[in-house]
Length: 455
Image (cartoon, rainbow, N blue to C red; front, side, top):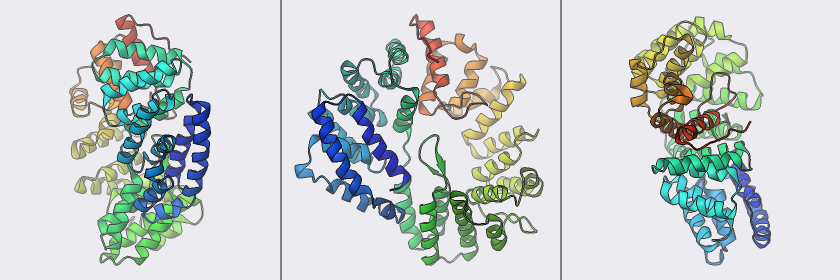
């Protein structure tokens, strides 16, 4: 079972904690045991790109003609990351047939939320909260749906209830990530694999780049060993005309595999393929392949951050300029972190690629210097170009009164935080809901809705 399937199953099992009746809990326990057994061998098929076959096998565990409502609910929880359309239909059925079961209403609310059906989701969250009024995370989810439908005061009141209720902030953060993540890496892998087997070199590069940094959620990503090993087997068997580019793709895959398993010598891999640590400091054709190679070179101590900057920095930056490759610019920016050149590189990368991470990096770096003002044209441009970027919104609020900022600005910042949490500052360990909570506290105060923030 791969990491994504494991996350789905854990999500499915969490429904036991959401107030299910004894009969439903018993049915869920039995169905979960059956389904877990059916999923045990799914990992190998997923690694080979057989996602449709896996999904069909999972669904066949509980045939449609005899499928109970509880079984439909469980299947929806397992399939939402691999077959969202089917999961939506399964959860819709469960909510209709189990109107008094809190977890069925909650799962359907999250399906509607994920589909940006905010008005409907708000109503369904309200049904759940009528059954489980003290469960804070559900109120926090409803608050987004309310604020996105213009019900600002109701959103602030819902947030107040989320702060006063029980349930962990980590649970809430995970649910926000679930409804706002629309990437389907296993589906992408299946498409890439089919094209690689037909000799598509572009698909080969995208496949390896995906598996060198497989994103599970907003906090967990990195190389997937099982997938990369399968990638190498597929690349070896494929008939690909461009052998030089294939050499770079294979090298990146091997570097990612070493990082994932801590087994092997990345310096030897790079040396054999004549990349980065060879005499010329040869770069791969794209930034997507450079990233795992550079990471491996530094991890293996074939290069240090400083030696990589001195040896490769100028050539990486030159190639980024020539190709306008965002990943190549990102590698250059990474090498120059902590130097006085970073701001200029961020600005150049932003102008060349239109990628929000460079705009955010530039502005975040300027904020503590005191040189960035509320009316700075760069901030205005970034806000217009990237209205959903939480880091940029955070800077706008900070420069426009902080907790006394105009409510309209706080509302936009709240929406951006839900889209993807900001880091909440340079020292934050991970993106989290700390800024969202601060914005709601400020908005609640402006509206006369007191919103105490728990520690």
